[in-house]
Amino acid sequence: MITVKEIYSKKDLKKFVKFPFGLYKDSKPWVPPIISQELQTFDKNKNPIFQDADARFFLAYKDNTLVGRVAAIINWLEVDGQNQKKMRFGWFDFIDDLEVSKALLKEVESIGKANNLEYTEGPVGFSNLDKVGVITEGFEAIAPMVTWYNHPYYVKHYEALGYQPEKTYVESTFPFENVKPEFFAKAQELIKRRYSLTALKFTKTEEVMPYVDKMFDLFNASYASLSSFVKITDIQKEYFKKKFISFINPDYIKFVVDKDDNLVGFAIVMPGFSNALKKANGKLFPFGFRHILDAKKNNKDIIFYLIGILPEYQNKGVHAVIFNEYYETFKDLGMETCYRTPELEDNEAIQKIWKHFDPVVYRRRKTFRKNLN
Image (cartoon, rainbow, N blue to C red; front, top):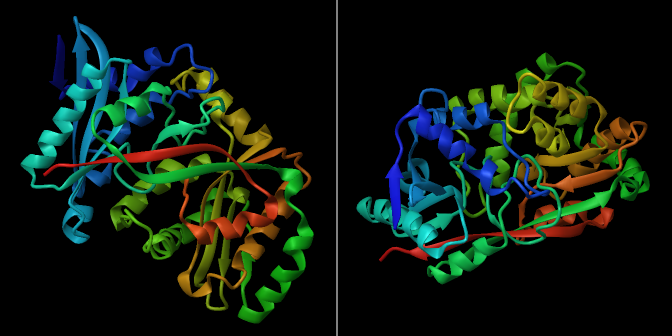
């Protein structure tokens, strides 16, 4: 007998966050999140996304044992502003029992129907800066901090419950030695002269902050044409500043501006925190923070988290300026491996940016969809 319980209390929300720790306790590729940060993500008083979105959280029990979870999400900016009648769901984890996944998705579908939405899609988060997709290929590699991991049986559950693939994402990697300066060093000098561009260098986080709002504006502009994109609002900008920017080495953030100091391109690279997070096992204290600081300073893996070019500067080689800056930053640090976070497989513009580095796709993931009518 499967019982699904909607949760309201902080105690139950902590059970929601900690459920994967048991489900994946023997999984080497799974990377635990920081529990306190996950709780803040779901805190309606702290995460400004709740000004434009609703979320309900469910736990599934079998014989009084916790066996699954799901978050049912409606992003009203998407539904009302873009006329995308989508019922989102994410943080969807479950044991290999079809009755469990079925019962959880039934709750999601019921909420979608009650709000006159047309289809469900998941796993996705609240916005485009959240995690996305269920892994369909590449289960062996350790998961980056900014992605979900899942057991291989998940896909069979989606298919058995009438869900169809909606979007495909790829994750790629290449050794740092593939970054050959001859592909961009001379070109970037020409591009800077032709368009009067300047690459900004940062050594302190406070130097970055005056440009972060512009960065999110550029992010909104450069990704607006992609399917399922939902813009970052002004109040969300402040939230993401506090949540992400302090985690990142300031010299891992690259901005390119024109002669009037207008931002035309940016990129954010993060150290590979996965092994540090496994050591932390969900807790910053007493020792987790030390592991993360060590990874921030001494990691040999880098994750390309975000890159954006203003639409009118796309196809003009601005990415060469950005890559040259990263090469100058990383060439003497002994960096070994570069990773890219999930990117839409049909995003041809982003694939062209990376082609000179001979990236190899090591993982694919999908979102799944089901019509509600």
